Length: 274
Image: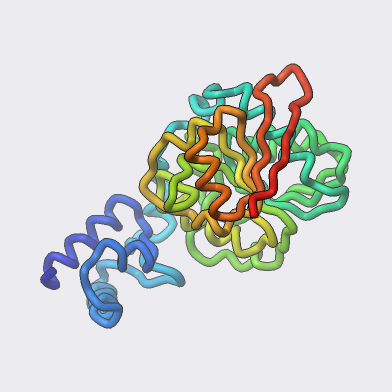
């Protein structure tokens, strides 16, 4: 791939997303790390982009991405999909929290279903979701923190894919996260900006808990948040198919399956994959 072709790829990705991680650039461009670094230095010198920790951003910075919409289903539509399974998964996820825990709850229609069950636990919660903030505010004994960043209105989520020093002081025992899809490549999301912001949060937690209904195992998405080996526990419903169950077992993931009946207490069955 010639320099002009590489420039077109890099600038095209920035025009679409506003930010691209170095990892994604190396996967998309056939060039050595040294060549790619020189390309980025040349483009930055020409005012075409700005290099930041972990990647590059368009010269508009945060203002550039603030006018964008995230890829994927808008929150107001997604919250009604597979609602029974999501409610049961959320209840089972809340059961993993211990009184006084510091936890991270990533924005999503499934993680939101944890909130009604957290009030007695006196948790310290860091979340990027304004929906989750709204659900937790009436709980007087639940401490709520949010990272700095840009509000994406359709998902009602706050994201900042670059450095946000204040967040670095938060340490959580558990991080709860959803996914657009679960494949052999890991937990997948539709938007690179979302992935970059979530990867930052992952580094602040001891264990990653994935909350995904069984339909996510037949879905597809473009960007990998993390490999399956990074997931400690995955909570899903009994629609999980056998090949997917075997895939999780091969990756030593603790699997919790729930009955998707929101009016009843989920009968959570835990199986340790070893």
